[in-house]
Length: 357
Image (cartoon, rainbow, N blue to C red; front, side, top):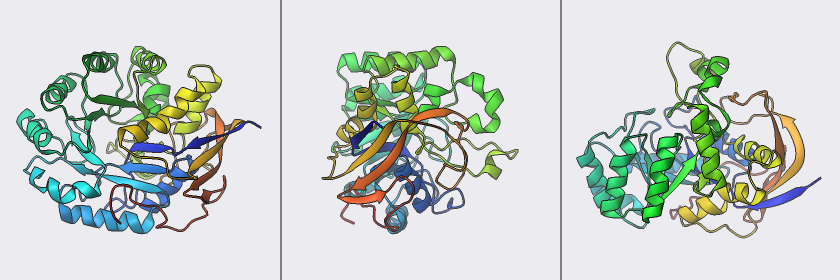
């Protein structure tokens, strides 16, 4: 058995649900999935209703996640179409960053007016990151704002050859940008939608094999900073209904998928580990707490099935896939929180990494 420790795994892009969408997953159920996936901490996006775009909504979310979280956590604040940049001084100490949705996604936070985007870039304090959903040509508009305001910007779920090219040029220019890619864009393509049906629908959608190859090349040459799950559960009933629900769960499957790529010699082990630990911690200015690590058995292979999955939704687009790398134990601040089979702490154990709570 080849077991290695991974210090402080962090997923900076998750949608834990809870609140008005607690039927999809709760802060307890989804942070259990995070622990089973090996994570020390997760950073939660602001588009679960009520959207985190004002102080009352932030207070509600802070209270609910603090009472339920099993792993450590942080919350994003959401940029709104109306003037909510005036609230920034009052909330900055309690959040991990700002999220701006520049293309259509789940929720009602789309901002497609460049002048409003500029107001957010102008007013957001430079002490913390701006994370953006920006696809294809929209990325040029956002890079123009990065160039003007020099705000650190993390580009989420990059998935096309064109986007990779823009960010490669932006980094060469010296712009303060980082980028994340998702396991579903790395391991699935539009060719899989016929097989997966609605389980293969997410935003941004699955792309071509050529786009997928560009992502792997960007991983190989060090352009990509983070592999982030974009964990976004919906119930089986919702995903099977006539209404379209975009999003897939991913917290528990990200690490074994990456370690499968390591086993297949598509990615060096050190690089895979950095993509889910040191790199996201660096971007968000976090240090790994003492005695916080995940033990992973690199030698064990298994098939992803619904019985293995934690979290509220009980399905995965990767069901039936054989992967390698089983999480044996997770410890946070010297406490074993997951023993490979069971969670060993109570809801509320997790701490807010960006606030005083």
